[in-house]
Amino acid sequence: MTEKSSTDLFLDITSQVCPLTFVKTKLMVERMDAGQTLEVRLNAGEPLENVPRSLLELGHSILSVHPERLDEPEGVHRLIVRKN
Image 1: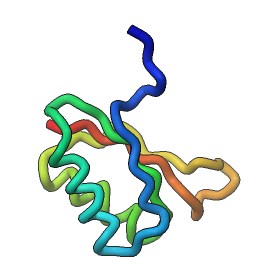
Image 2 (image 1 turned 120 degrees about the horizontal axis):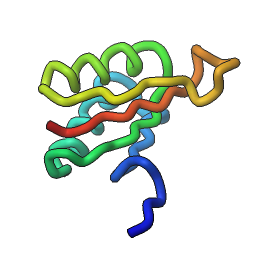
Image 3 (image 1 turned 90 degrees about the vertical axis):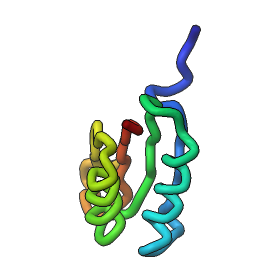
Image 4 (image 1 turned 120 degrees about the vertical axis):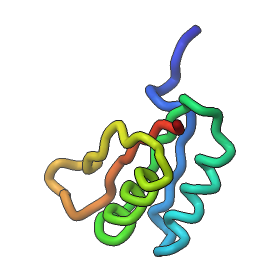
């Protein structure tokens, strides 16, 4: 079995604004099986503050959060979450 990426699913919410950023992420996580991982592409600011926090509050695991480009820490980030 070969892996295309290190996550099971991918979601880009960079075109969304709060609260839709979390709503779209939550809906995707709800469709996942326990143990599956999701990579979320999101903007810095409110989405980066709210989405990981809200996922943790629901009992899921944040595996990593990092900027796409190290020279743009206020730009787009990648969040990897595991459904518990």
